[in-house]
Image (tube, rainbow, N blue to C red; front, side, top):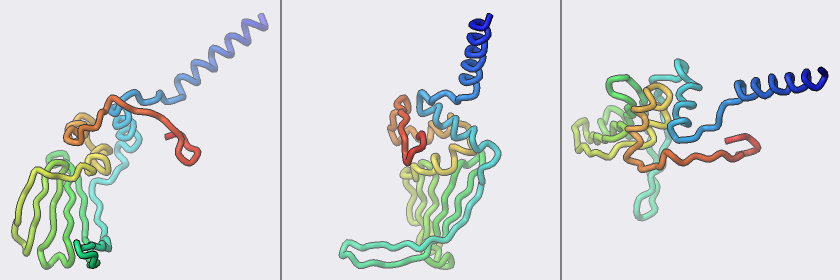
Length: 158
């Protein structure tokens, strides 16, 4: 009877451990789903900040600018990042999405290209949009989403 009781207790502990322990991600989709779930309903949809940026020219000369940045996400447009280079009144800047870039000079559209910011899906989109959309936005990176691994970083599981 005592052996049965120990075996029952061990079985119950094993079941609890399986239920409580999150399963290791087996794909990039699993990683993105875990990221989304961790912040569902808690992540910001807008963010503004000012950044001191040092640009180095081909001759090595440095030029310091202040960039005014605004990030926003809507279900219709996805994630957009606007950067005003220098004084916003001068009308110089760029607007990025995951797959497009619009450059503005002197308040006028200078050019538009299918060359977006591949980081936007990972710094904003993954937390606030369906995972399928994030995966579509990441397709151009050609990252193999079937490969994942776990390791330790500074003593913590990663």
